[in-house]
Amino acid sequence: MNIRELIHRVRNRLKPHEELSNEAVLGFLRVLEDVRADELSCDEIYLKLDEYVECEMDCKDAAHVMPLIREHLDICHECCEEYEALLDVVEKAEKDLKK
Ligand SMILES: [Zn+2]
Image (cartoon, rainbow, N blue to C red; front, side, top):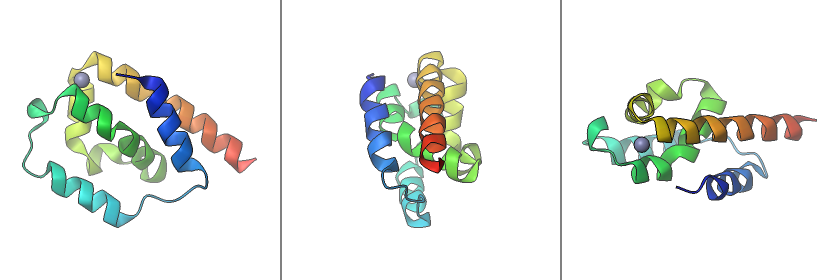
C-alpha cells in the first residue's frame, strides 16, 4: 500500500477535472460482476480506490455503484484508513480547483 502514489494518481486525474463517465463505471462493474467482497484482496481494493473516491465525489453514491468496495472497506480497517485519507485529499483538491 502506498497512499502517496494513490494521491498522486488522483491529483493527476483531477487536472483537468473530468466527470467519471458512465462508461467507465459500467466497465468497472463488469470487472467486479462475478467477484464477491470477501474474495477481493486489499491489492485489488487499492487498485480501484481512486475510482471509488472519484465516484463518491461525483455522485455521492459510491457505496451503491461499487458495493463490493464498500463492503471491503467496512471489514478492512487498513483499506478504510487509506480510503478516508484519500477522500480527504480529494475533497481539498476539489475545493482548490473551484477557487
Ligand atoms: Zn483491505
